Each structure stands twice: as C-alpha cells, then as structure tokens.
Image 1 (spheres, chains in turn green, brown):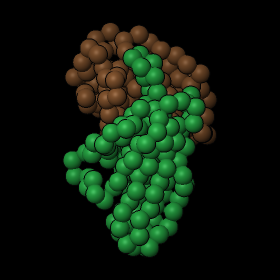
Image 2 (tube, helix red, strand yellow):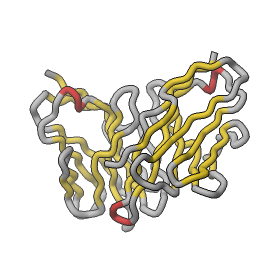
Image 3 (cartoon, chains in turn green, red):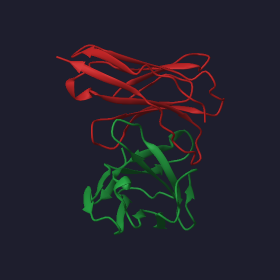
Length: 117
Length: 110
C-alpha cells in the first residue's frame, strides 16, 4: 500500500513553545489529508481535514488558532501546535487519501508522540 | 457516516482463524466497509475494504452479509504479531472523514 511518513516521530518541548509536525505522502499525491490525536487507551479523534490549497476544516471543539494546519503541496501537510501546554501532550497521527471511488483508501502515518513539559 | 458496533475484545489461538464481527445496521447504499488495525504505539494500518461483495487480499478476507448490515473480518492464520486493536469503519468515498470507534482488541495467544 501507499506510504505516509511523519516527522518527527517524537518530540519533547517546554510549555509555551510551538511544535511543527510534518506529514508526507511518499508515493502518491494527496489532495486531502487528515489529522488525528490519540490519548492513552483511547481511540483516534479526528481534529481536522486538510485540503491542498485551501483552509483546513476543524472538528467541533478543536481550536484552529492553536492547531495550525498548512497543506501547501499535494504531498505535504503540517500541523503546528502553538503555545503548547502539558495537556497537549498526545500521539498525533496524520492520514492521506489515495485513489477515487471504489479504490479510495486512507493511509496513516506512524504518528508523532508529543510531550510538553 | 453510519455507526458500527464491535465487541471490545477477543482472544484467538495462534495459527487459528480470527473472526472479527462488526454490525453496521444503518449503513447506506453508497457507503463502504473499511477495516484498519492499530498495533500498540503505531499508526493505523489499512487492511481491506468492500462495498457488498466479499473481498480477499494477502492480509485478510472480508465477508459482508447480503443485507450489508454486518460484516466479518477473517485473519486465516493468526500470529502473535496480529495482536492489535481492529477498527471497522463505514463511510462513503469522495474524501469523507474516517471516524474511529472503540474497535476490538484482539489478543492472539501462543
């Protein structure tokens, strides 16, 4: 299947700093990417839908000014956690949509573990 | 998107078939059934998907009932590395969001 990468795989930062996470589709172009986060022993929670060349669509309860999403190319979306606080510590996962119609599938990245001290 | 119901956990002996059920009684005609799994501390892995016909690939088989209200994912010869949380998801195509439920935690035991 298609490959999605994330960078970094883990990051530790101080409270108040900003952290950028990159999501790349390595062997296909993705007009739509998605960002999730996952807390321990919980399921994935969708944060936002990222469309290439346009503004992201955020799920209810997700602060768009805190979680900045940029999808500037067909292979790259970035999530910036601004002014991070300990409660933002989580596992952040992106996915990218490949194919159309019956062949459409979403492929997920390996995740980025964020720890805010 | 239609909601799905899965058992919270299941056990399976190594080498035996693992049959994971999923109910999706409110599925609409243009929605597909997708299965993903998540091994601890990793991103979800795509397994298989289908509309109404049974599907098989190198990882698993997907059996969808004729009325499409339920499906079963079959891992024909489970190994210890198949221990993971398995998610059954129903959604349309065209960029629709993938919403995760609680999934089924499968334990494969030696």
